[in-house]
Amino acid sequence: MLKSPYLQRVFDEVRNKDLNQPEFIQAVETFFLSMDELVIQTPSIEKNAVMERLIEPERFIQFKVTWVDDQGSIKINRGYRVQFNSLLGPFKGGIRFHPSVNESTMKFLGFEQTFKNALTGLPLGGAKGGSDFNPIGKSDQEIMRFCQNYMLELYRHIGPNTDVPAGDIGVGNREIGYLYGMYKKIQNEHTGVLTGKGLSYGGSLVRKEATGYGLCYFVTEMLKTYRRDTIEDKKVIVSGSGKVGYHAAIKAFELGAVVVGMSDINGFIYDQNGLDMKAVSDLCVNGDLTKKYIETHECIYGNNPRDLWQQPCEIAMPCAIQNELNLEDAKALVKNGCFLVAEGANMPCTLDAENYFRTQNILFAPGKAANAGGVAVSLFEMSQNAQHYPWRYDEVDEKLKGIMRDIFIKCYSAAIKYKDPYDLISGANIASFLRIYEAMLEEGIV
Ligand code: NDP
Image (tube, rainbow, N blue to C red):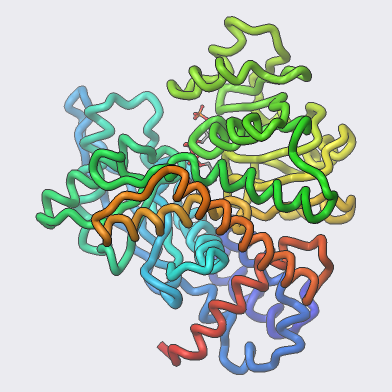
């Protein structure tokens, strides 16, 4: 129950209108819970119908993607692009290829992205795209044909000053290459219309590492501020071993943490003395970490990735997918000594898990702040493309550190001013909201 009758009314309307969109409703509820007091103290928010305007995407595009598999069968998938909010700049957000992609996941991701992009302080609006296409088990040729057909529709909705997609789950360097190749062929221009590109044709150094590295930089700021401590010697578990999870684990290890557990869709691995990170590095390249790791290493293994949360650690980084960590998992983590949770994925913790961490005084880094490093470096990639000049690795990495420090300070300052210093969920929501709110008032009723 929300304290502000206005927020409660808007929330009830969303629940009725978008009844079959549970992830979107969850994202809106988490956001509204942070905004309660501010909305009560600021009547102009209701007067300007700010919340109604914020929760409605500017444009929701759904299209058919027809492609032919290696056996010659015709396949049809649904493609999406939600252009959620462009108040601060061109739409920006990743493309996800995963069977769970639907209207609800697209809208929750676009909504979250809007606030995340606002926190970076950069001129970026929020968007998301994807398809229910499942890349697992597809040949390289099938992936290429699918990407090309997806772009055959998407190209008319995007552009370097309109909407700039990037990767997400199931979309990495290979897919971005195929998407970009097709866009270039149709439009006959080489522009920064996608980020996460290969280095040979306009990509940025540190882009592929940025979300995972940024997550560790954010955690470092939290440990320094709240505990006068570092990540050194802390036992860390990371779920997922894709682009975000892998790079978070590697950076944590480089900073002196002991990475004791990781997972993928096939299960989890755990070693209280620390995983062999050289082996993790070699195996993650092929995307088959857990099964291959146990062929050559003695460690605890389970074929349910969720059981990773039952293992002891001090820091947990959920980096796989939405709602991968529920209340029961949260209780196990706290019981086993976890004191900090940092979301690398988007909304990986259920709302009751999040609330539980709050009641237990667990330090909590919400995804929209802690995983914003990827989109920040995407903007750097856009800048390099516009300048036709690549930046050095150390230059990008330093800028990334600076952005993550700034994001932490914004969240922490807003938490102190409006809630309590430990409530970074509210801090992130309020700090990003205030920037968007200002732009909304200045740009008029559009
Ligand atoms: P990837 O596709 O590269 O990796 C996803 C990883 O999660 C894979 O290792 C996959 O296993 C694993 N996985 C999938 N489902 C589960 C599950 N239920 N339990 C455990 N592991 C699982 O995606 P990304 O790393 O790019 O994205 C991960 C998360 O981070 C998403 O929520 C995304 O929205 C978010 N994010 C990504 C950003 C980016 O820059 N890429 C930026 C900000 C947020 P397997 O390989 O076996 O399928």
